[in-house]
Length: 422
Ligand code: EPZ
Image (cartoon, rainbow, N blue to C red):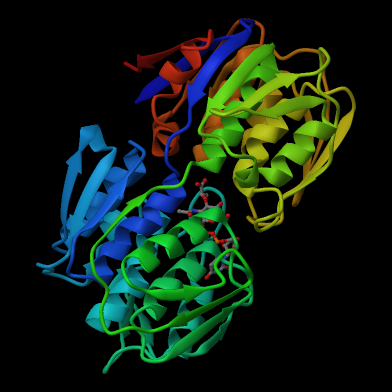
């Protein structure tokens, strides 16, 4: 396994390119299952999660052609061979469950392994199942797999979601494009990745209205066609790199960044004393004073503060002037970065879904362990500020969601390198 070693203290100056959104691409790729025509995706991020989704789709008989080093993907499901998503692949990545809706919609059957829990929570699929059953699917859980079928195809329905689940909204949105009749998704997730998926489906011929609001209406059509679609910018990678200069000084311009992707996050940065300026090329970020101010954060579905930026924000607040309270409302166990930050000298008290962060003057480098994707990058950020060396182990978590993190940070002055563990 690899580790990443960060030596703190260098201020950052320059431009960081932001890639296409992992969480958009992981929903866009399964959309190929809805049509026998090719789907071309551009601005695809080069990440291990994308490789995992590619392997899953290929196991179903989908042809995936990667071009331009993986930035362009051409997917075609005209020669499908299976509707079974195997546990061996699904257990590695929960987003594998996004083949359920498309398989049911076009092939009227699907056998999808339950993803199982992960470090941040149990990650059940009840909302997905209840919604698809309202559309006529018959879904049975047997030996760890969801056995789903929709004889005669899915039917349009009114589908209220008990919680604005991103994945459930994506599964239902894709399923509804080929269902007979009209589907209205109520309490739909509003994330930019949902809007991006709807735009791609519309380019394929789907009839969708209301994406980005809590109510999405879909008129089913008989078939979908070919499309070429650019993956939206990754707002979580964007937010992550916007924070980098706050840890160690300097000014960074995140290329491709757009304010509307990170509104709630930027409001908190402004309250913490961080300047964010829109430029023609993206978003420029620098700390106003010499230390951020403490702010309270509550994670919520979009347009609220994103849970995927909570760990990164906590790391920054460890150095703030004052005490901050972070409330994690989306996942039941998403503070595993806290004890690792405490190893670096942070002062954090975790109580259930709350973390109280008492700002300290400095952090000290230490060997720390990555536990999940966003926790791992919060430790890299903390290492930028810490005195001495921080060695982040198990960085395979990092490679799931951040392409070339050491290249992007060293290009703006960070002292960071990847080492292969013996
Ligand atoms: C997506 O996961 C993202 N992943 C997550 O990003 C992100 O944290 C999450 O949305 C919330 O924004 C992808 O898009 C691939 P949810 P998803 O369904 O769809 C519970 C990252 O770091 N729930 O909105 O799985 C669930 O347990 C990853 O990039 C049910 O109870 O999230 C969780 O507590 C991490 N039953 C909450 O809802 C269900 O049927 C939010 O889940 C579905 C979800």
